[in-house]
Each structure stands twice: as C-alpha cells, then as structure tokens.
Length: 123
Image (cartoon, rainbow, N blue to C red; front, side, top):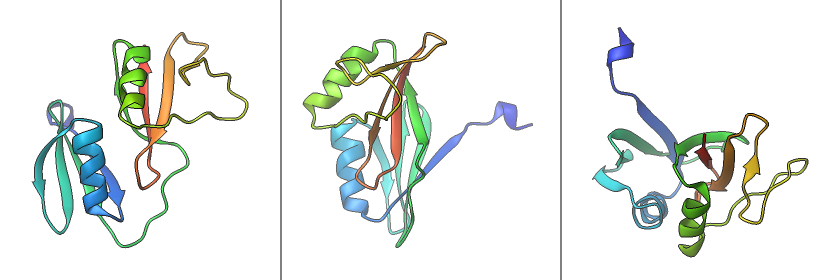
C-alpha cells in the first residue's frame, strides 16, 4: 500500500527564519511554503517539512541524508558556503572530513543550525 506513495521527511527547528536561510540559501532547496507551523521544502521531489517548535533536543545520529555522486565535490561546495563538517572520535576521516566505511561507502556529516545531524553519502 505505502510502497506506491511518496515519502515526506520531517525535521524540527526552534528558529524558522534561520532554518529557511540554511535550507534555502546554503543547501539550495526550493521553498514550497513557509507558515507558522512548518517550512516545506522540495528536496528533489521529496517534501521536507521542517516543523517549527518551541523546544526539542536533536538526535545524536543522522536525521536526514543525501545520496551524492561525488562526495568530495559536494563537501567542498558546502564548505565554501560555510558548512562545517563533523569529525567523530574513533572514526578516521580524510582531509575532506569524509569517513570511508568498510562497505566502501563514503560519508560526511554536518549539522543544521538546530543541531540536526545531516549527511552526504556516496555509495
């Protein structure tokens, strides 16, 4: 039943204006709507709703990620827009901040202004 329906992603923000600036300007997502309840974005055909809330604690793990074809180029482009990439203890990262998983995937993590952990993965 749901295998034929579109998925909607959800995140939370305590500051809608700051979230809009980050997702629209820094990440380049198109704003679909912005009201008192949520910021809705088009993430390449998938709706991302950033819910406007008074309080929340971000998860300490990845909440949303993108499958990219060239992770080093994507990391460099985001870094040029002011994005800082995370480095986690116990994981070796290359000069771009990319972790090379045993499976062969390459992953880089960064946070939005609310501390939601986002990722880029090249499989």
